Image 1 (cartoon, helix red, strand yellow):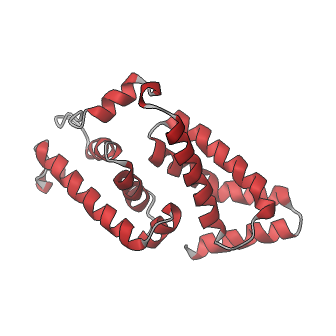
Image 2 (cartoon, rainbow, N blue to C red; image 1 turned 135 degrees about the horizontal axis):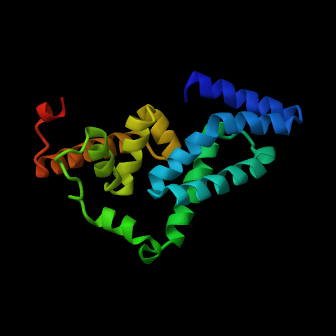
Length: 189
């Protein structure tokens, strides 16, 4: 956890203790709303669905804040609730309920057209096609600029697991780029 996040968590909890719940909510939303959404987006791969689950998570967090007991850091508690809401959403939604566009994109690992595609869109498409256990850590580590420790905390798993999954995800991305003829890094300059 960064020093900034720790300071914000302490402020939120102090406001809660003072009975200033609206101020606590405002601080919580300022700091965590976008992070909760991005985590949901990384898990669920669908903007609308991620928005819904993020809202559900924030409501659950808000309702649970008065009973937060401090056994874990506030940020860990928030990310645990978010992760659990995402897992619940994923377990309740079957593949046949996904839109055809999403299914086609997920099924076609070679959907990227290397001619004319910019590097960012190529990488985003390849990352979105990774299995959850690789896609989520890659997204948090590289796109959210979180440390390995922060990713492990957010996902509720050991640091070693995050390191392994990051390494395997990079290898998978490298292999997919090679298969597309884009493995030569001089092409990316």
